[in-house]
Amino acid sequence: MSKHTDAAGGTPATVALTAAGIRFLPHAYEHDAANTNYGTEAASALGLDPEQVFKTLLAEVDGSLVVAIVPVTGTLDLRALARAIGGKKAVMADPAVAQRKTGYIVGGISPIGQKTPHPTVLDETAELYPSIFVSGGRRGFDIELAPADLLRITGGSVAAIARE
Image (spheres, rainbow, N blue to C red):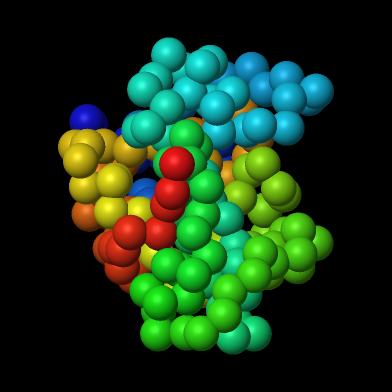
């Protein structure tokens, strides 16, 4: 993977990665407005193993927002997410709140460059790959980067938070 030095579409995610000197590759694809399964659409459009493509979800754990990053092939285990950050109860965040707090629209929420930083947990399966794909900050745009670099830029941690 080469270091991409321009803002590649100028999303907050690419700007943050470039400023931090983190290597990433941008991957744009044609988004079908009728498709609301954004992660599997990205995997299909880019010809990727869907287990290497991750979706960014926001949940509330004990009333505080938390970013969860899980493979598009699975679902978020809310109990596991709560345990991963030392909380008791987790529920999915309201999409309007997620959009307002991240600065991104649903289907294009990147874990990187969010308007308000939140604790971030990456599913442990990400570590099976040298690089993974996450939203680049808009529908039809993913970023490829090393899981360790994603953790570094988000200040995140790794835990088993996904289930099939």
